Image 1 (cartoon, one colour):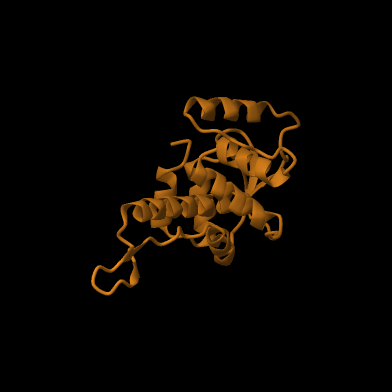
Image 2: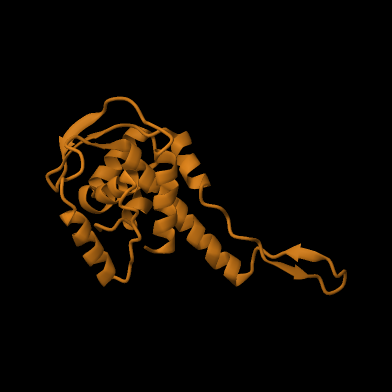
Length: 178
């Protein structure tokens, strides 16, 4: 699993194992034929998931005249790591919308054929998934993300959760089905 995907899945899984989102929403059948109910996701919950992903360590340098160690937010490695963290937080927000905003009305499939297909497709793109098959929440999130969801589902959950259109567009651009 890519580092940002793994961070995102772990962040959502951590919160999902502690929290339950209640309330009814809209029931419908997705384009892939899976029956779901969508419901709003609290902004606080999305923020908590994103906070599970820590900022990278700030680089420092020694000032040549004073000898004082100063932070260097412009360090190229730090900038790269910050972009990765920002992407991981965006992924985590999208994953939180899926995990807490989409209820599978018929549950997960009885067999893991879908998981084998996801592993196959992702491995062809160089992405590895290290899934704890005993963790139902991780498995459920991967099912929702790679089998159930499409851009229109993300948009619907985002809209009833009060997420901005700009955030939805950014998330849709990075979504695997696009």
